[in-house]
Amino acid sequence: MINDVDEALRGLIHGGALPTGTGEVVFEAPTRDWAARRNAPTVNAYLYDIREEITRRERGMIPVRDDANRVTHRRRPPRWFRLSYLVTAWTKRPEDEHRLLAAVLTCLLRHESLPAEVLSTALGALDATMPIAVAVPPAESRSIADIWSALGGELKPSLDVVVTLPFPVVPEYPAGPPVLEPTVAVVRDLSENP
Image 1 (cartoon, helix red, strand yellow):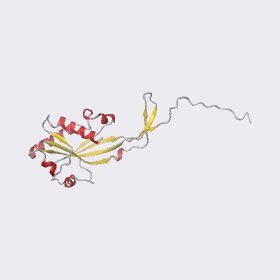
Image 2 (tube, rainbow, N blue to C red; image 1 turned 180 degrees about the horizontal axis):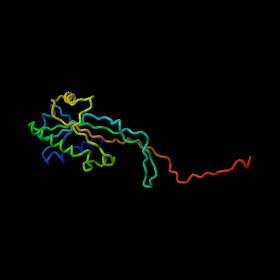
Image 3 (cartoon, rainbow, N blue to C red; image 1 turned 135 degrees about the vertical axis):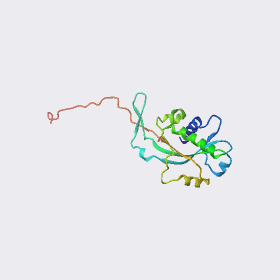
Image 4 (cartoon, rainbow, N blue to C red; image 1 turned 60 degrees about the vertical axis):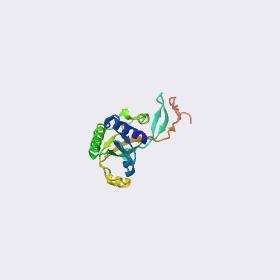
């Protein structure tokens, strides 16, 4: 599922922020070595954190029905996760990087969730809205400056982009056979026969 979100973001940014053939969208760690190899305008969406969205956790089982609307299996509800990306622009000049980052920001702000046209078959099959949060301050437990330090790079303008999506929990458990006959109750008066 994570790679499907990567491809959805790639499609969204390519379609809305990068004119055709003017750059690329990559998902590599923006280390000094990586930055030195850049020779074309690049938007980097580095996945730096994955956390469960605990507030969306559900308990119990969800029925899975067949074409006749009979319960054939049961499965646990999906668990929701936040995928946090550090999005940066890389060009030869800082002014161009700022323009490119502004184009990415404008593109992402148009959408409150991943649009259907960029979803893979697997993501579309989840039949869920996958919200996008852009440039929201990160949790107190982590700092963007700490991420840059860990990568060994210099601090650079960036967007914190968070996509929240469900991960299906497998396996499905078979349900008992459906009840096809009505319940019949036989009532007798026991006072007549001691």
